[in-house]
Structure formats: C-alpha cells, structure tokens
Image (cartoon, rainbow, N blue to C red):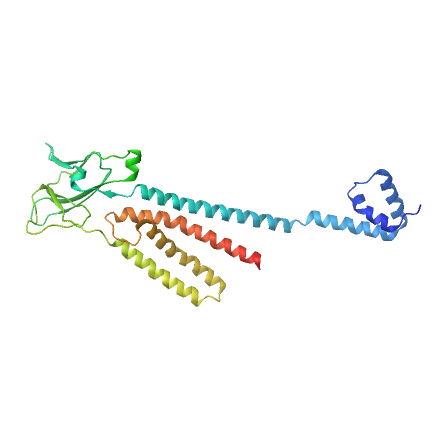
Length: 297
C-alpha cells in the first residue's frame, strides 16, 4: 500500500516529538528517505522547535508583568490597610479632655520643695506648659488631663502623679484648663491675674499646614493642566500633586474640618503617619490604572 505525503505529514508532528509507534516511525523513515518535500517539512519543523525552545523573551516579559501587577496590588492593599490601622489607633488613643472635677486632681508640696500633681484613676494622660512669671519669682503652670477609649478598654497607661518642678524651680501658680472655652481654674498658689481670668486657647498651627497643603495642591493641579500634553512632565507633577492631597485627606480623617488642637504635635504626627501610606497607596493605584489603560489600548 502506497502511503501519500498527506498521511506522512499528519504523522510528522508526532514523529518529531517521538510519540508514535515503532512501525509508524519506520513508515515515516522509509517515506522521507525517498521524498525530499516531506524531508524539507520535517527539517522546517525541527528549526521551529529549536526557535520556540530558545526564544523565551516573550514568556519572561509576561512573567515580569504578572509579577509587577501582583506587587502593585499587594503594595496598595498593605498601605491602605496600614493607613486604616493608624487611623483606628489614633481614634482609640484620641484624648478626651476631662474637667477639673472629673480629673479629681490634687496639688501637694513635699518637703524638698517639689510640687506634685496627683491624679485620679480616670486620668490616662496630661499636658503641661509653664512660663516664668514677669511679676513674681516663680513659674506659672497650665495643665489639663484626659482619658481615652483605649485606656477604658484595656486599662493601661494610667497616670498617678507628676512632678511640676523637676528642677526644683519655684511654682507661683498652677492653672487647670478644660478646653471648653471656660477660663482656666486656679488650683494651686495665688492668682497672678485677679482682675480678669486667664484662658488657654488651642493652637492653630494645623490650620496653617492645611492651608499650605491646599495652596500647594492647587498650584500643582495648575501645572498638571498646563503640561497636560507632555506625558513625562504630567506624570511627574501628578506624583507631586498626590503629596498634598494625601496630607489633606489624612488631616480630614484625623481632625475633620476643625484644625484647632491642644496637642498639635500629637495630631500632626498622626496625620503624617496616615499621609505616608496613603501616598504610597495612591502611587500604586496610579501605576495600576496606567497598566490597565495600556492593556485596554
């Protein structure tokens, strides 16, 4: 029985991979020994196989792209989770200022001249500021206390007492401020301003930072619009724009629309701790969107 070239060429792929029986292999060998056309087809198949085995660049590119996409996704998830975690901790540890009555604070002077403030169990933290009196020989101390959700739940970091003059300096007066627009209450010494009350106001420094970030964001947005046709400049300016945007969002998450603070440093650090992971998460999201648009195109 004469075997046609069509039958042999159907067998060539299996022959090339050595996946046919010995009888079929012998049949192909006999045919290509006398058929130059089928032999050329077999030689071509061998060449293509070698090229497929050695040219792995497309596969490496696909593997790199998949790995990069996975890294971006993981980075975005981790940074966003970190920002949420910091926000949650900031909420749990946020000071809840207590009134003088609830704090049950008492001021005592010990034998060595130290002035000690003793707190009740409801106090988990305090703030103290002092300055040299212009009219009297001694320092004027302003202080307040607070509790927090964290301490009510876990019962940790209770503050029992604090020395108001650790260096032994004289203390003229101690005032307690209650963060509720009432005048400070004299709790030790004598009133240095008997004709009018003293009122401790919150700091406004966070308002300045917020306005500065808002102005910088507007300036960067304008530059992005101006250089919108220059892809390199636009991408760079967009990354810079995300910095003030991250800070503004972090500020809103921590302080809302109220920028006043009696503990400006604490609130500013909390804002920064949320700004950093938010910014990295925004960068990861921007990269992912860019890759997605390339894929759709």
